[in-house]
Length: 183
Image (tube, rainbow, N blue to C red; front, side, top):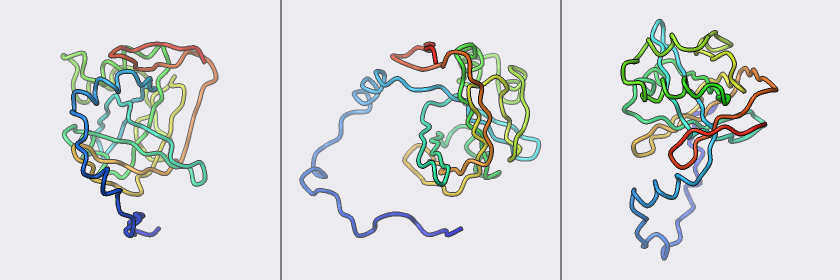
């Protein structure tokens, strides 16, 4: 596996556009509220330490090879666990898993760290990262590259194992709220 940077180093941005100011963080957040996205729990294990977070910043990159990109805030514990283990699992939540989404999003203030894994049933696939039973899909991944993107790490991952179920509603996040949509 090459460790080369896959960046077009000879590409330059449009100079006229580069001189324009970006929108404010508030304007960006307001616009993104209208972008309906699937809800996931990103999990990782480093030895006996397990960590996870609810995330919506997950995207398929390619099917061949099977790759995803996952963005994780550098300030959450899971970021270091992913960096140390080199693995993560993307658990795509079903509509009936809203409560566990709230647990891993920190919305239940009395539940922290390892206690989050007392919610739901967990197992492992290929990497050892916790895999949530009952999810619509699980993508167990090895991290192949890490990009430093402002407040987040962008983890480029290769999928080593998957599971899926073919029933149930999908859990999405739209306009500041969890919502269910039929498959």
